[in-house]
Length: 592
Picture 1 (cartoon, rainbow, N blue to C red):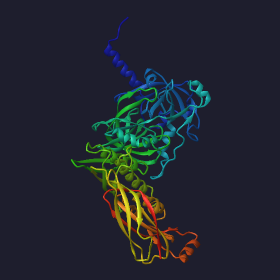
Picture 2 (cartoon, rainbow, N blue to C red):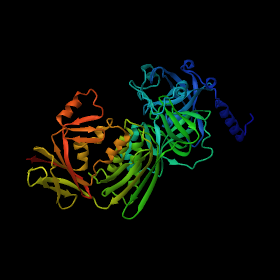
Picture 3 (cartoon, rainbow, N blue to C red):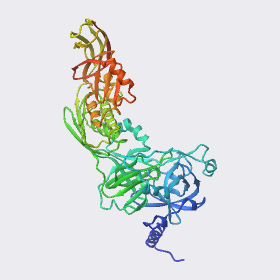
Picture 4 (cartoon, rainbow, N blue to C red):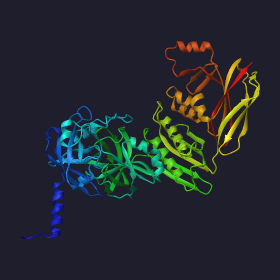
């Protein structure tokens, strides 16, 4: 029997694979197969990458159709993947979007998997017709698409067919969260928030841009860049189809945010890490190839070309021995930017060899917004307990400022730049309020009382700090409360104006002014409170409001942006301490 040379066999195999690859066309109707034509037992293939940029064909078999599985008229095609590859790996994180073909026609994207530790590679396919609908019914910018349940119950008859127990669910295939330059400690601090996004965080890498990066075909991988620069964070999905410069990928929502603007990059698979619990692709990302524009229930969509603008974030870390500068670029997203900025800032601070968990941190920075006053970021931070370093408190305060700016009901803010300068102080500078007293508890209006505060520094000798408090001339007779406190207690309990006024101010600018007036951790405060009403009108406080004005306010059906508090601040004094102050004490003063 004649033999075929090995080189000829390789050529023949290549030709057969090329012949099996479905022809791509701009006409969706000519190349797609509707769900109504799909029957159990049909054979097909799914195209995906396990290593490098080589798209491989994996055989599959249709098990059945789950009608209305993820919503009204949103079906799922249940399939069984076949072959040695998937017997070892199962359905792999990063396979989301892998195109599925039957008889050379595009059926949809592999998007769901059957739990973990399953004996078979069972997946759910999002029909291509549902994915294509996002091109025709994209919501206007700024709207957020609602997520449906992330679990699809597996009916009993299908559970028997796939040897799964009762109560099994199909869940979205995990999306790898590729990180470079991210320290394990940063991942430990922010990992829960990453996991809440439905992503599996893992180390990856970046590669140099190539002119070939934008030459995509179905089965290739793309990255969605969240942070770039000295730290990079990207997610990865498989491309389902490429038509006229537009791509569809994932087959399920990335975050479910609706209209978005996120950079698309070319992703490459280093290897596929097999695991009985959850196999995943180890990915690197390359050059920017376009913009992700839609993040919907059945797919994500993007346009090839230039990427969207990102927010520059510069972190300068001054230590006794050196200065480190870090530069990042972060996507502008009301939902993600606060966490991403906090993680990047935290990662930059702890990355310095000179940084330890004990030192005090002094922050001086700003968030620049287009058309508005910058949001000032100035404060001191010291570790409150051995398990939480000062850098985490600093990062979460930056995160809080971003969250409050983005959640404002007045306008969509446009962040232009973030600058953070952080100075490390070698010793731990913190002191706790251990007591407070005044020599006389009774005074007349206009008199000044010397308030004594006992402070106990960290590993230091206690000392007494004096604060002169002058009773205002217009103070009425009666009993007043004097609050000796740190900034946090004051911001949260005594004067929570910025938090409680949101939605009742006139503009974003007024919210920024309130944020910039918040108290600082390195000052010791004395606040005199009297039991008389205060009216808050937009960003202004009107203490000691007469009863006649309150009556008028009560009779109005819509008092507008005015709010009534049954306590007024008669005066406030503070002393710079150059260390973080914690604690509070209450004193009583009788005005004669």
